[in-house]
Image (tube, rainbow over the protein chains, first blue to last red):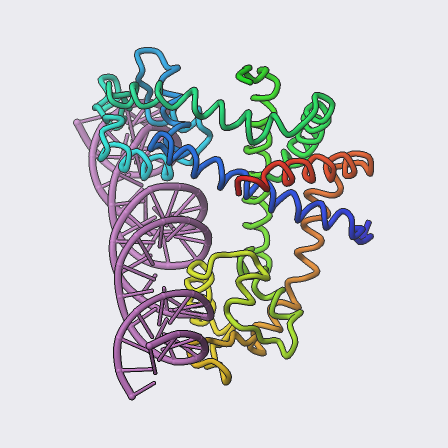
Length: 151
Length: 151
DNA sequence: GCGGTATGGTTGACGCGTCAATCACGGAGG
DNA sequence: CCTCCGTGATTGACGCGTCAACCATACCGC
């Protein structure tokens, strides 16, 4: 099949990219301003907070946040400088590293949770009706499904 | 009002961020692979292609793509190295710059249009029904509206 | 044990985005 | 004129992401 998109489809595509981009930007900036944590910091701290002993092997953490190892490595380097996390040697595999949440990291994450959830509610959830949320859930499910083959 | 979000709202929020992120990534990578242009390149070339004389003042271009001037300046520097655009002095205001589409830039953009539209259709439009497109349009309109105050 | 390969993780280079500082020119008021 | 201010645009520093190259260790088969 080789038909063209309707212009509505194209417009909605642009709107999707632009709006989600703005949402990301606004919420990310707000999080940083209110808590000093970037969205990426938040994801990492969340995963570590939920982990047993507040520590994870580097590759488990990569799975948890769904990042490439390289990206994680770079980000952990920045977080380690700020003493949000620490990297210990792994007892059972000397290639490996264990990423450990520091006290400071745990504290900062706890302090960030409420502001973050409030921001998501105010700037996302409050804008949409229950029906819209349901419809959006379906749309995202289908998009993700469709993407699966070629991701 | 100080109620919490439902967990569905939060899940849909995460799905929105994750899915749009993946879409951006997959389509961006595909565009680059197929045409050698990044999404940002494409936006700039599109705006210039549509401009009178294929040239725009730097700040008009910034308005057209809705970027900060600083971001545009950095990006134009990279594009100029690749000879996709050129920067001329402006005749009427010697502070200003005129951004001009080069032949090469125009050629590359023309060659990129069809693959790009095809990719958007395949990975976005083909995944959704007409009803879903309409619903999504409404959702995005409301989100954008809601965002307006605090952007 | 020993060679080869797979795996865990890091590094460097580079594109992209943001912020704050800066520079150069234009324009108004004295 | 000339000073002061606003504006057009660039720069530098830094965080973030990706890709390809790399290093070290583990593990498998002989």
